[in-house]
Length: 316
Image (cartoon, rainbow, N blue to C red; front, top):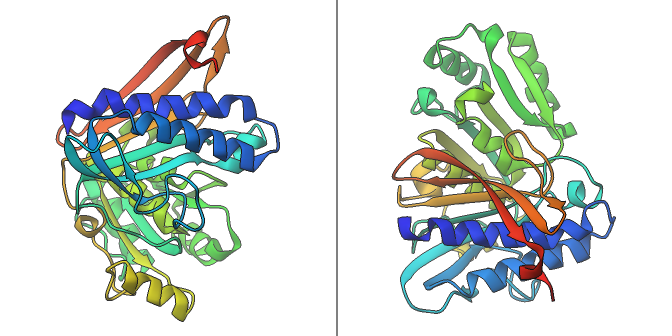
């Protein structure tokens, strides 16, 4: 798996460069199509036997990078692949922060095949690993994380997406004395942030997309943190979809090893626009400048990579 690190970095860089012309354009379909096409082309050049388990949708919904699609040359390592060619399509086309292109790769059979539905998520950094329980009251988890991180509750910072469905969480956290950091877009970015010590984030919490949950789980595992989740099927159709994807008890809490079952995992992301820890892509004279994060689970080490790409390499 380690041999794929730089190859996967090129995949996210290519998708980010393809998205650059659409920053601020207002055209979501064109932006997503450009990123998806570039990512697929880059993946198909890799010497892997890959299967997309988290992608752009079912085969009848997405023309490429659909769930179940085979990518790579068909030779080499058998791997599961989770992708989000543009995590934050709205921020991209509105020229706002928190857009990136993301990929996670792990040995075949080790990534949760998560349906596209809501998922409740809770993530923490390495110091609080093993101390959270998504079934326990939120206040109990807050106290446990504070103790694990050696902090007073008033020193805790908890990330939550700014959505009406989270208002009860926000109110409870603030009553406890902890601080809430609200964000609008970028679930995966903010999940990973709990494990980057310099950011001083203690917990990620909320209800968001299940595919983003799996991508975030790979980042958290790669950095030694902990994550738990619970699928939230809306109706019988979504329940049946879980069953069809091999999740026989859809409402049962998912521990970290059920989201990602191997330390032999890789997480890579390249900034499209600025976020907490990545700079957005820039065009300077005759080159593109990309800024990426690259993590290999066996090492639990963050690599920040700035790359310069000659413009002519991407001319059509």
